[in-house]
Length: 333
Image (cartoon, rainbow, N blue to C red):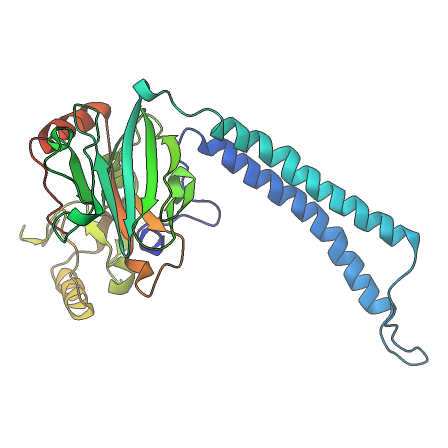
């Protein structure tokens, strides 16, 4: 989450909403906050009134005994009942509408997600639609999920570490499990969050809105930063969205390049751009979407992130066809 926040200016409220079911979740959150605010204001005024009325002052001692008036009891019961209606009456319909309608098996993209300290392993069944068998005894550094190559169904399976490929506009069905401790699968922009528990396989599903690809999001998130006073630290996750050239036409910072991996390199590049006559930087996130872990799962919990490659259905099908030619793991693994 922090990595994504560092790249994207989300504003002061919820992050962008990109999933089909996310609108209902946002409306529920908005509704709950409005009504809680309506409860909070009178309670805060009543609290301030009591502080003033029963305070210690000249000719009057502070009162420490609870109020015995019936009106306050009625108010407490009314507020409690209101909160129950708010949570149960509003939340349950949204929850039930989402959880009671999983996508049909023949119309969904099914992916196994295996969590471990500190990475996400994604297992796709390949063109045959069948997951190959996995065995704990086969787990190794080069085979993180223990995929059994002796199983014919595993021949076209795809395994990616910290790379989550998804098509837009199609139902995606995830089967979550963990190899070690409790993690929490979280995609804030998809309004998805589910604890992942060792020994259990928990399904969740969602659909990315049509046309919301990583490439389009990256272009939409382009922003221009004045070179004067530019802070490398705040820009370290961004890449150039265009070639930045000097007045003589020399490319100082090429499209797709970042300012550097260290503070020294970054500040030196900013100085170099400034001397070349560049007045502002056109920057965009390298990867606009991420999976993060929302559970404190260890001392390197903050590193547990996966980039999301949201593609058109055609691009996704082409990726599956190419990646399934042989089982291989991410070069970053």
